[in-house]
Amino acid sequence: MKKYIITILILVAIIVISMVYAYRTYIKNVQELKEYNNNFSKYENSEISGTEIATIINKAINNNEQNNIKKDEKGNYIENNENSIKIELYIKDNDTTYSMENIYNLGVEKFINSFSLETFKISKIEYHQKTKKIKYVLIKQQ
Image (cartoon, rainbow, N blue to C red; front, side):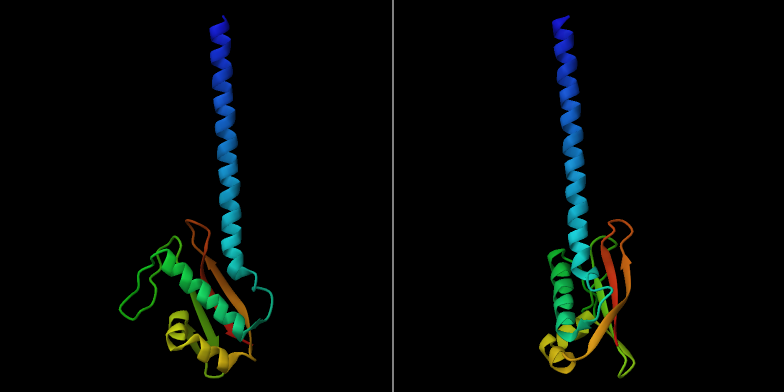
């Protein structure tokens, strides 16, 4: 009888420990997702300066490089449905949308010099369905 009770207690302890571990892992993953998305979505309802645009682009490029996102023949990152991110910037002065790769390749410093006094606003954010991470951000000049 004692062996039976001890076995049941051990099994219950293992189940409880497993559930606590799974819950903590889930909470950690949710927190990491919030922190990742906040890198870009924190600008969503506010005006953004040209300098901050450079920061956003650098974060997106860095993220794609860390996740080994492949590039096409033009040097643009290819979406992978998991953790890639694409930033596009609409400039109303010339009615043109530029990819983050174009701005990065032409020189972020040059962009800052040209648009540091301009204000921008995020007009669209899309998320990966699989991971719920941000996959696309459209920023428009005000």
